[in-house]
Amino acid sequence: MDQVGVSDFTERRLARLAGGADAHLAAAPYGHLFPTAYLNPVPSPDGAMIAWVSDRDGRPRAWVAPLPPDGGPIVEPDAPLPTDGDVQALTWSPDGTWLACQTALYGGERTRVQLVSPDGMQTRELAPGAAAVTLGAWSHGGRQLGITVFPEGAGDGQACLVDLRDGTSTVLAAGPAAKVCAVSGDGRRAVVRLGRRGERRLELVDLRSGRRTELLPGGATVADARFGVTGRQLYVHSDAGRERPALLAVTLRGSSGVSTVYPIAERPDDDLDLVALDPGGARAALVWNVDGRSEVELLDLRSGMLEPVVPVPGDVVTGLAFSRDGHALLAADEGPTVPPHLSRIGLDTYADATPLLPAVANVDDALVAPTLHEFRAEDGLLLSGWLFRPSGVLGPLPTLLWLHGGPEAQERPTFQPLFQALLAEGVAVFAPNVRGSGGYGRSFASADDHDRRFVAITDVRAAVGFLVSAGLADPGRVGVSGRSYGGYLALVSLAWFPELFGVGVDICGISDFATFYACTEPWIAEAATTKYGHPHTDAALLRELSPIHRIDRITAPLLVVHGTHDTNVPLVEATQVVDALRERGASPGFLLFPDEGHEVRGTENKMVFVREVVRWVTAHLNEVGEQTA
Image (cartoon, rainbow, N blue to C red; front, side):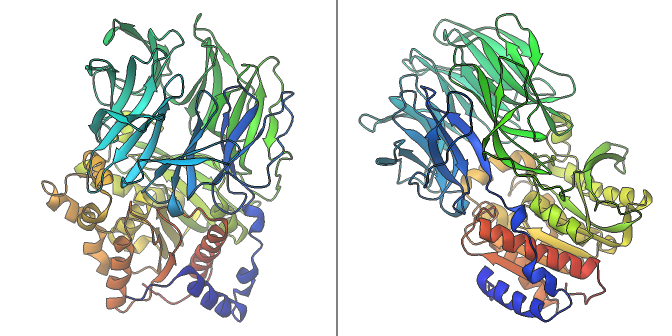
């Protein structure tokens, strides 16, 4: 089939827009929706520098600058560190010699681990011959770095410790989603994570004997650990054997035994999202997920006392670290009206958080915050979703459902340029958390596994029913969209419930589980079987759940969006949908980004994406147009 690149697609679209009724969209002022995003603040071991990730030059890169000791704003450098590809994560070596960066060309799945000196003068890649490499934990002195190596064609990753002096590596464990989580200060023990989705486990490894001991019984969706200062205790962040992720203290016995396990921070109705440990070992900063919004607390690890921390400007905290002197927290946060930025939270006095990056906060009074609504699934299960409506407008509106990915992810009140652009055109957005979403406990997250997915799909129909019965949505002008798993859910909803939707947008969604398993990266396929089913033993189930086999039922105009370098949900998942619809005489839109992977990360591409999705949705919800799919 003919693949339409973003440049060709956009040139033709702009030419049509210039002379049409929607000509204003060609020059839509969406630039204000794409300020520089600042993420992942990481102070250097001596506290004098700070590293972070931002897209100031158009794509996510690593940046380093001095960290003012008085808590003042950071002066940004002229250029980022020299890395190949988009930066996804970064961490300092304990001696401050290197920044380890996990990168990916075009934001794809074939990640690399690159070491870069803070001045950018030296670079080094680890395991360059592997299909993919992911970042783990440093050893205490910085001589070794934990990485996971995925050999070409292999489903299991090899969690290794690489000696940076001579390049030798020691394999600690191998399996799905393997990772080196922590190395003890004396270098005698390490903690590794292994397991498929929903079945993650932590193992304590004796680095001298190779003996491995399971830390906690039962699989988990969240599994991470860090050693305390003395090395005799582990702090484990996990939901193994419990409904909600919590912080557990694990006392160690001898070189590889576990003596006691007890919770030190847990809530019955909230997930523990993030944990940051004080360099001095006395405190932990905890980020709780409370109905999608973040709450930060400070835990005294000696007394067990908890105290609240002053809120940050954004609703959701995405990253957190202590300053090296322990007097402040450095946070990455964002909200529906607050772009991703870095804040400093002083711990000595209860004062407002101050901006680190950007130095002056971005404020746009035209942006709209959502309201959280609860509704019932068709079987009575309580669900919820975030409703964005144009300011000052009453009555039923054209409404687009947005379905998040994962499915274990969660729709939260974050900064969403697409939503705000749709609101400016009079289209409301409802972003539900259907069963299978994270943030509501393990039972809810696993409620769509395997054959339970049939009921989960009906949650989309229940969301439409709620919006219409509540007088919020015009029943004749409802659309459905989503990204990744949400793209799959949008496709299957269009095929199963065609009478409900007037338009659809599929962004890198699975259309056929058989081709997904055959073409995705083997380590992604290996980890996914617990969630979707096995491609061989569950082939009949997966076929019934695949929307490609009901493609003839899709009648709503469909826009398909994909990245050429997506090897998570490979490009074939998009092209076979477009081909099948065209064979039936339909005219689906197809927006292909030749320089993107599973997510659209380039700023210019994001602008094109928002403009084209808004154009597609408004053309079919705000106007009476031809049916193109």
